[in-house]
Amino acid sequence: GIQVEQSPPDLILQEGANSTLRCNFSDSVNNLQWFHQNPWGQLINLFYIPSGTKQNGRLSATTVATERYSLLYISSSQTTDSGVYFCAVERDSGYSTLTFGKGTMLLVSP
Amino acid sequence: EPEVTQTPSHQVTQMGQEVILRCVPISNHLYFYWYRQILGQKVEFLVSFYNNEISEKSEIFDDQFSVERPDGSNFTLKIRSTKLEDSAMYFCASRDRSSTDTQYFGPGTRLTVL
Image (cartoon, rainbow over all chains, first blue to last red; front, side, top):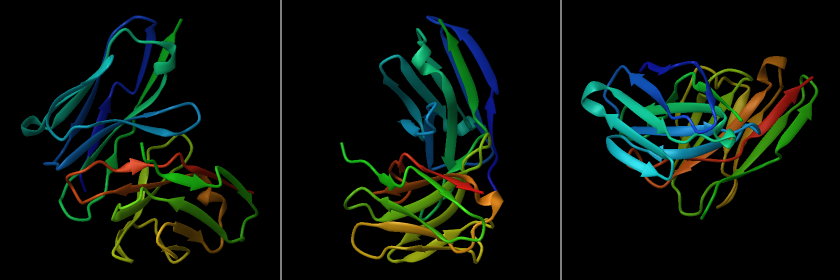
């Protein structure tokens, strides 16, 4: 199956710092989503971004499908940004499913 | 904004008991999914469901698991005889149409098997 690698596995930031999270995948994808898992375990959908660039407030994401990677940028980080960030990809069209990476655990300290 | 809902939020059960986890997908969505996440691990696909039948399932989804859409709104996951290793967070997801739209996830049900 498709492989999804996320880096770094852990990240500690001071409040106000910027960060870049990376997701590499091993095959062509039709769908790529970024999620934030909050301390209560909920998966919050951040971006649907199979290609191109999107921005939502302090967060933005870029997917370069031809080079099989995606980046999630967090600017001016806040303590509420803490949690695990997952990248998930879908390889085929039709009934395909999301394959998740292992996540990046982000801790933003005051 | 429409959202996927799941009940209960937390279920504790004894090993060997049957559990049913419930999900209400977003209205008018056509594709439904169950995923699970064992504590500290990544999210794993269990099963997808379309047009009242399973369209794909993973190796995890063995004979102990079943899914059903008993009416026009609910989507359920049943575990017939729970094991300790079934303890996990179970997520339901739905999407409008395949491969060109976001999968929307519910808040999850945390299942604890004692």
